[in-house]
Image: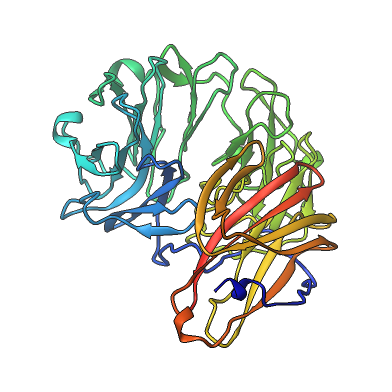
Length: 455
């Protein structure tokens, strides 16, 4: 069977490369998802997902370590018969080292507290962990607001918000009467922007950015009250990040207006100098190209940061739809950030179609766009896990690994074609692939890996 990995034809570069693309190797549902949270649920070292689907049951998607998700809801989490979940968040609420789950419900249904047993099995403990509530809750914030080492819980309803303090064991008490001071007009309608937390004034605790008049809330020892100076209307629904690299949290309001923090939660408009007028609303922000600053993922492409908060367009296309979830993380273990089901092709290996007996099977290796990159493509007949710090983890079997291609990519990507013999005994054979690239910015890096079965 090793001969299968030697039967190569010449690869050919594509004319253009997109930075984010869907692939066959995600396994995520195509049904409408309202909210998504990520974390290592089952303690195996990779990032899993929990999905909220409005009136559908909460779903648990486990990661195989390579960015392939499998629906593992059955036996791991049980949704109530009546559910209208609009917000989910993983957090260690009881201090036992694993991630528990908090879920916010609409339609006057009670919110939910699930405790993790450490292996990714969740038990509904809402009856003992949370006071009775039927407040129609489409949004939430889960964060350590009182700096006591455990996550607290802010819930947002159309008529206001509530503050639940954690006792350290995952039991929440409603302290709204004493810890929400002068907070009025702060609401959470079903399709209002989700609230966020960040240390806006540099005092070491987490402030809150919520929707509605007076929604910029200052944290003073765990007590929230409106900042004296609120945000202008153009800064509504902001994304939060240090866009200009000066160490404080800036805001991107309405998906297209930039406000730079002066270090004390006062913000100066910087749209004219930082953002081009051709930008469409930004969906999320993260370090797309691994150069150490925060870039923008917008509906019309990527906008790369120069490190000082000035953005330029990077020719890239990606499919943006209702299920383009905004939680960026390294789901496939290659060191760069992507969105669930939308891998980052900065350093990426995948195959557009599955291998079929008697057919040609193409493996694509993508590296940093517009940068000549020396790359080595490996194939193997098994998976593995060999840490090679600081480069990453070799996730294919070293004993059966073969070098399929060594080439300087100018420009990437590289297509390598395997001719699959028409031998019935090969049906079901697992083929594993990974690459090593000498990146011009990062040096030696290991890409993601993936597995295909011969059909």
